[in-house]
Length: 238
Ligand SMILES: [Zn+2]
Image (cartoon, rainbow, N blue to C red; front, side, top):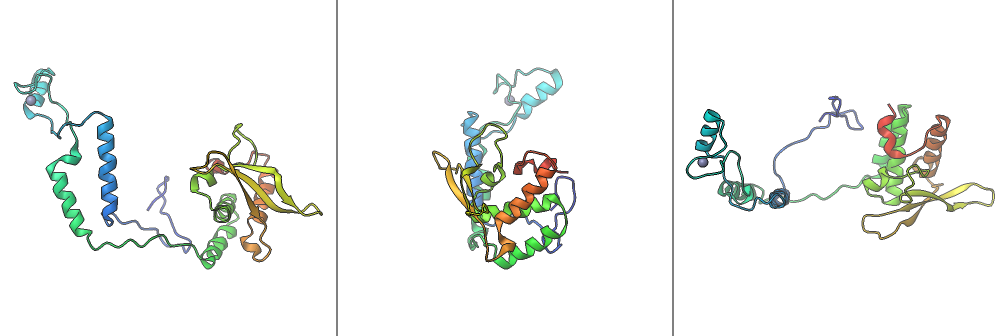
């Protein structure tokens, strides 16, 4: 696998990340066919699938006229109709179903604390701000059970007037000595009608996994650079 600049993507152990093609899960191709069917329907292509007419194409190529052959008065120069109902596609899908019959889904594999420790060692050893940000994002995502879109959208200050996925100082928790023990974020989840307050607690047992310590270090470094902090600025970090 390569990234946008064409460099080979490595995993945390420095090995090349490899991707395999092909249909393994029968559910994947059902989803694909359904999505394609919806797209075709939205474009008003409900008729049976047809290839361009070779006679219409020939007339167009030779005379430059879009008036078609005897069968197609308005010219049949492009394919049209719903390919998902075409016999070739139906036959192919039957074949895929057969070859996937023994497929068993593995389910998602959670990251173990040992995996996380390995990831931390790599990201914290490079001295790169981008890697520190990545580790902070991983910790916050794990602690607050965030979806990736919510995590990427988190804001430390109100940069665009938006009040969602924002740090909330008012309900954050401090010790009597003024030490921060819990930071509140108001998160707008996918199905939430209004933002829900989630507290990111300090972890005194395993400081290496403490999201607050790492987040505050990250904010401290960014503040020195005098920029507005927001995770989705990653692409500007250089
Ligand atoms: Zn024709």
